[in-house]
Length: 152
Image (cartoon, rainbow, N blue to C red):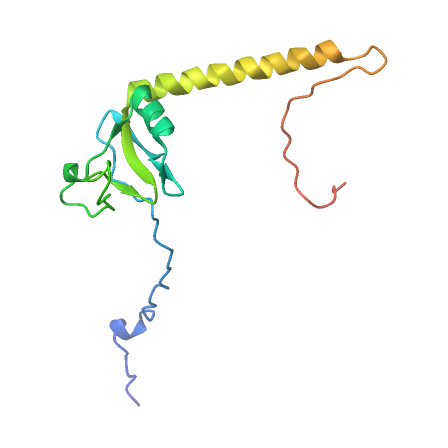
């Protein structure tokens, strides 16, 4: 009678498969996380080499403040080396700015109300222009359909 040769448990395990490495292009707009109570946003500081002072002034008046690179000494973010924004985090004509969360929410609410008012005005204007022989109906709903035929 021949002895059965037992294989070790370790040799029965599945071969380890190496995970496929997935490469993605680096983002040129990486930014540090905003401190608690703030939001970060990239704002335009220059266009085609010319300072965009109108945009910067409007953003600063809106409550944005520029983010200095020395606020994040352990991080390696792109820094503006020269010009009036030297020392700020910035890349390609954009400068990182922060705004308090409450101002950002109030600003968003303001623009949401402006948008709703414009949509309402358009809706009433269209209805005012309709002719009795050709009424305008506004159907505002969303439908999701899938391809293929209906099964009976």
